Image (cartoon, rainbow, N blue to C red; front, side, top):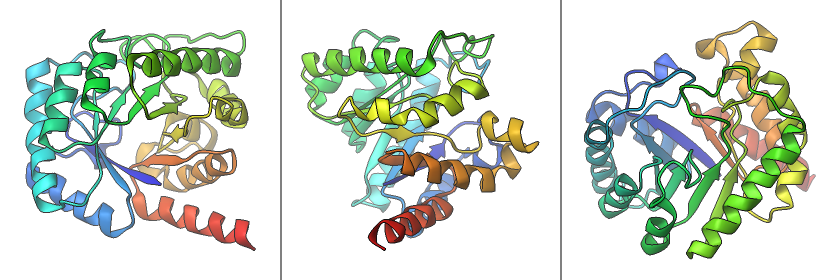
Length: 260
């Protein structure tokens, strides 16, 4: 599946993805769904390296009208809420979201796991070293794959013990990791698959591409497609992307390759 990113924020690290009005969000969602997105991930708080925590009320004002508008305009669309706040997750599900995508893996808000269990929706747990403000200040690991797998296994277990039936995992590419860590995680995705949870890969236009190719986020589409293909080959179930059409094409071509 391809998950299209709807950034309802003026400070996303990809300038061209910033959506600041409901009309912009609905137009972008319409295009993404037409291009084959299986899910729309709505977020109102930037988690780029060095970003500050957004007040709850501001995050709420950004995302709830968009989710309500998406549900009205596209009643069959699958909508995800990208937040670490339990209260906002609950309000978003009430407005029409049907999945919670949490960069905090339930550790940034202690109410998140019981809230998602009560809501009875799927839940994505992500690995992050530090917080968005601090995560890229010299991240270090002894064995990044082993440490990420251990963390995700613990958070999947915690989520299931809380009563969440459907748990997905995100290795957190770029969240407290340098490029070498990110490529090691991409190569080591087989170990993450052993957790028995679908893998969400968020590689779109990230620094690991730009450092190798000398690009910037705005010119990193080709590199993104290459890494998305590698992620699929290594077992990713969902690609979280800014550019839906190219990701869907990668999925289709790989499916044809597997059949042939």
